Image (tube, rainbow, N blue to C red; front, side, top):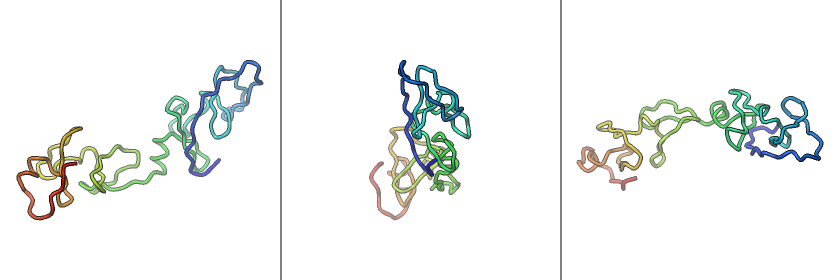
Length: 155
């Protein structure tokens, strides 16, 4: 297998006159109406699975990942091999598979994405401001509770 590769999965109908192909997972003949094609090989729908969580990769989406002779779903690939970083608010590690919020070059846990003065959490569509590299709600930004630094436009 290829080291560190993203691959698409295709569903291929088996033609009635076509000789059954061998499954790369179980080595059995594929006699189903449809088969999966990935990594230049053919698979039963039940045989193309993530090596970690056993989820069926034909159902999860149209992408799988390979590395170190493992076939993986996106979540497990990122969990095992993804790049992690630190939250700009709490400085704790953010796992590669976790959902995050971004403001300019800063990355935040969802729970940490809040006004850094009053701790008000933001909802989708809320205005927030970045001043002195701190996230502020509109009230704290307009109230000028921070001294110095250049004002930023709302994000």
